[in-house]
Image 1: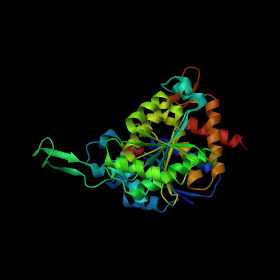
Image 2 (image 1 turned 90 degrees about the vertical axis):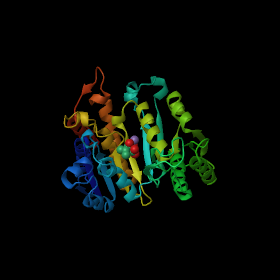
Image 3 (image 1 turned 45 degrees about the vertical axis):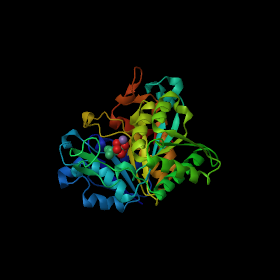
Image 4 (image 1 turned 30 degrees about the vertical axis):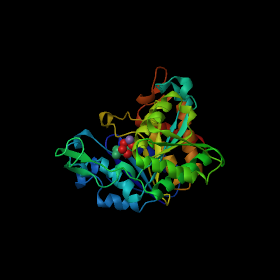
Length: 363
Ligand code: IPM
Ligand code: MN
């Protein structure tokens, strides 16, 4: 088993180092190899996703990814910006299925901006399609308008599109996730679209409905994306699994993450058809706190746990990491993002050490 470790920019190297430390302590047989990605790769190789980094990722069973991006690269041409690295990895590895859990840890219920009773026990999963939609649709670009409100004016355009197989495969993934969370039968899936306006999402809704015939035990409902955004803050616990396209999934998953009050806690997984996966925290590179040793490494550590479960067939080791994280939270240890009066404030490395200690204490 081989893991490609891509720390990236900002707090990426600090949080990934803690996850690597935890992985090494498990005494499992796998090889880890690091490579630069994002702005860090641009600095040394002139490209955010150098050939050698891509090759390492393609040849690995899983990729552990930190974060990319920094304001200092904002003036580069789009193909050279750090964000292109993650988009390129998704495309080249075919990582079409993105899992973004939003879990409200009982120890952290107070961190949410919503009333505790609305989020206590929250456990939802967003399944975001990750390689299609307006993110990758061609054509896109700039040109002189020949029609529209201002013919002759300069304009920019993108293309929203989904093919039937693309929708089918993500629908299957989502129905199966709903069923699995319900213990093998049942569960609930909400498909989010904009079928009232967009042809692409009327198609989406039709195909998801068609695939549903193969999962009669799973309850399916459909919401327009604007209503879904509203329901997420009104009654988040009414959701179980949400499936949606790339763009809506980007937006709703940030909203869902914030319901828990602690985006520093949330892992994510992006899988292809071969269960090769890329695992990364749901948060970004946070350049404002980079290098200060204060970032929360738990989302990355939990991403490593997801990696063990989904790509490396080590469900038991994954559960051990998750239990260790639960232990340190119960001990009252908190990085700044989740700290409040009465908690013990710790930095990145101390938090990683505490997870390690909890892991070793499990025997
Ligand atoms: C995410 C990020 C990316 C996205 C950016 C960095 C390209 O926001 O993973 O959600 O929009 O998908
Ligand atoms: Mn996003």
